[in-house]
Image 1 (cartoon, rainbow, N blue to C red):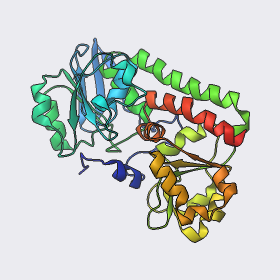
Image 2: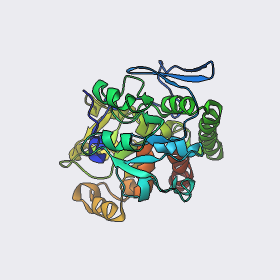
Image 3: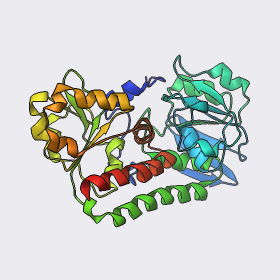
Image 4: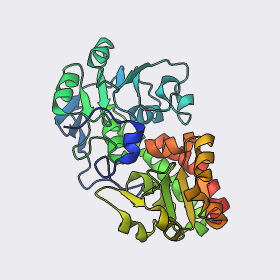
Length: 330
């Protein structure tokens, strides 16, 4: 049974059980079928089919990132769900201006879905593509309003374009959502064209703190897909350190040799304090200046944007990470 709680630490520690997708533009082979029949939006998902008969006006974003997709379309939900970050209205900087003067209700999944609260808001659509629904919770939500669940294979964070397609159809804006996705692709394509030096350069994306003296790198998945869309490649050497997830666990005594395979190291730090502490760690200082000079330490916002992997957050990644990559790679 999927859990309806996913902490930031749990997300960082998780691997293939959350999501898949090795490139920004990738979708699963079985993308969630959506259609319009006699003016009714029809969305298939893990628990059956949902029909939305008229354009919704009161939408609840019941999962961690669905509100980003709505805001990308110019739609403000009546409720959003806090994942982490602590920003007003659970909305990160890349999406704040799209809220305008709206003050949506803020839900949490800390103690499970707030079913009674959601019911009290009287929504006409509930988006839960990234809420880790199980059958019981789906039944509860769908008893309140038409509910869009995950497509099936992943409880959380299935490929963003799959979520985008389902959400766009459910709010009667499929062509507008297609345009949003195309704009993201274009942003990355433009960055790649402007920086041919990126092509085939090797990058390793690592978590922003060590775990029991080991560095944790991402071998594949949504947290590396955006890198391949910039023409960058993850070193094949990481596969030797993989477990039954998308992570590579790199022992301290082998760290220098493994990281030495990369042209750039991207550390997912989330504050200046975390970055300073990481760089001061004896395991890291032993790497030497050459590797540290090839390192990028992210801000909280940039790390969050990579984690969210939504249309708006990916645009933020393109705008804010590319200049840093260019400084290292030329």
